[in-house]
Length: 273
Image (tube, rainbow, N blue to C red; front, side, top):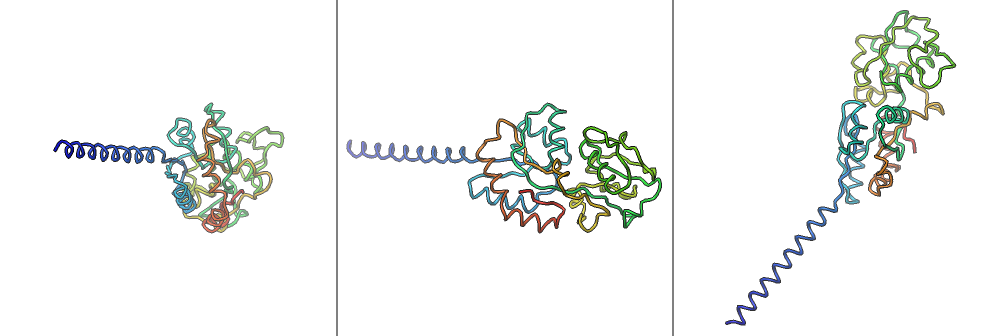
């Protein structure tokens, strides 16, 4: 009887040790799972869903965190609330970093989204009349970019000696006495009922139901002068070599993602890789 009891005790201990070992392995696996939080503005569109699927095959879970304005994604990144963001171009990024003293780094490029002039009242840029109101984004970089676009469209002239991005004070010729109004970038589509023209970022225009190449009255030409407006992936500088974030970048820079972007945006967003 003693031998039987001893055998039962040993068997119980073996089973218990096996169970503990199995639990330990499960916990380790769970701890090893990587979750990447990606901050964007606008909806979670097809290219991000595709990226989610590709990263899942690598054992990485991608969570898309949406923001309603251009201020929060970089602050959230700096504070560790997200791991990476993709919503801004170089010019905005560099200015925002300087203004807020943030230690962030661009690790790769995404697309360029041309600015467009939109209207519910005018069909052609030649229809702009004296005293018309034009809404433009009020953040420093997109404001300067918008003024350059108005100059390209032949509506104003900017002081050629201005250093850096122009402001309203740098307009030297405004023959139609246009009333240029600065507003939050996200509100530029809603301004269309109140102004003759509104300058809208392509991503915001698409979210508002526009096809930029078809619906804009005038669209920004894409050339060597638009390099500062290429959109990027940004991370905390200490994370720039993180292998999982580099894997995200690798899986984004594929022909499959390029095809999705070209199909969805029809030229309103142009892949830059």
